[in-house]
Amino acid sequence: MSATPDSESPQKRRSLSRSPLLYLPLVVFVALAALFFARLYSGDASRLPSALIGKQVPTFVLPPVDGLADRPGFSDADLRRGGTTLVNVFASWCVPCHQEHGFLMRLASDQALAGRGLRIVGVAYKDDPANIRSFLGQSGDPYAMIGADRSGRVAIDWGVYGVPETYLVKGDGTIAYKFVGPMTEEAYQKTILPEVEKILR
Image 1 (cartoon, rainbow, N blue to C red):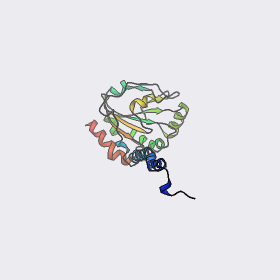
Image 2 (spheres, rainbow, N blue to C red; image 1 turned 90 degrees about the vertical axis):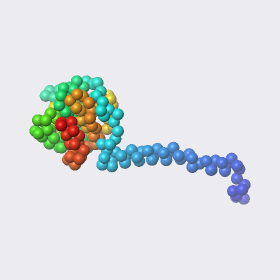
Image 3 (tube, rainbow, N blue to C red; image 1 turned 60 degrees about the horizontal axis):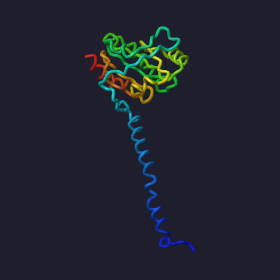
Image 4 (cartoon, one colour; image 1 turned 180 degrees about the vertical axis):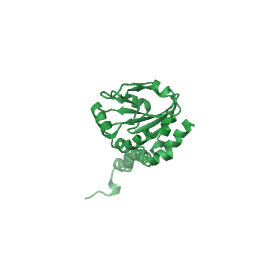
């Protein structure tokens, strides 16, 4: 004879009534993950927060990429020597980095901005030197200096979420702006260029 609700034990009824609570942590996790990815891919990923905006660049020293004799590495001291520096964190294995690279090449050839003191430097993130050389050999090299961050330790100190990411650094070493994701002409004109203009005034 099958059991009726009245014949179920109180312990079983309490267990059934609590069962939805078991899913609460999962629901909270999914909601937070959805919020993060919505912010990241909503077309305004640059709004992801950075505790370093308005502060000095972290202390670091990055060696050059092996085999790139004409591109020195750099350190935090190099970012405090005047001018405005666009620090681009990239990797040869990063698909969005390939997507934005042509734009970086055009930006590097902009004599008007270069004449006003803007330079581009690269942080090669967790990448093999041979792959970096191949990537830049095929696609061009927009960087005045390239530092090899093989371990990713320097990127962590900068608060990097993932590649590509780009920072604007004032001539005194202050981080003025952070852009997350691949740069495009639209993103540059609407968000990055106004920030560059603020610094170069």
